[in-house]
Image 1 (cartoon, one colour):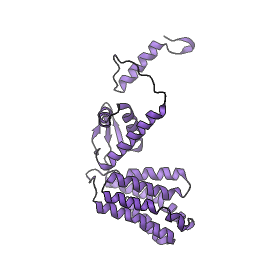
Image 2 (spheres, one colour):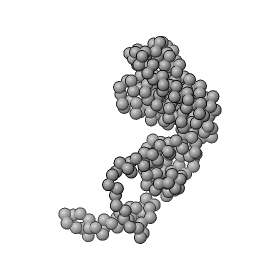
Image 3 (spheres, helix red, strand yellow):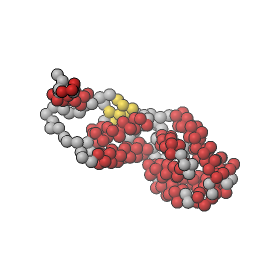
Image 4 (cartoon, rainbow, N blue to C red):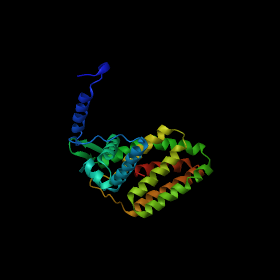
Length: 246
């Protein structure tokens, strides 16, 4: 049955929506329709907060590689409905962090040493040439302005929290690459960097604090080389730092 101008009648359209909702695993019987929120930004904000929380849980190892997690269960954990969790998980699926398991939820992707090595190789191809180009053109005082970010990574590393360090580490790299004035470059590099920070299957989710501190110290050393315009040292430090996953 169709209404005016070929538009499906309300009853038919409603039936189709019920079927679609059922296919997504949502409760449909006897439910009173909930009006859409007037301010979409609020829902977006919740989704963003859940996405950040899930990324932190991935990096810290709370969400374990190979395990399957359902949106409703995670929603209960975060005190929200399954909808923003499902939307955040779909984003993580696009990023390659999880994969959809029909009628069950999302499985955290299991990553091995080979994938980490491949990510390091691609990051080196993207970041090292850019840093070398910037080393030739950016004045020393501009590099010195990034010193607080480098020091922040050292403090984060000293905390021993992998998730805290991962965030500060990306912030430093983002600031360095932003000097190239290429937003697409920064976005791609950060996506690669984030993927490189996910724990390996069977690996420790909590690396030793000394490892994090050593990685953070490389940021300061790189800044020193950039300020001195020691291109050979910049090349060596940048390659070694990326190869180590920093």
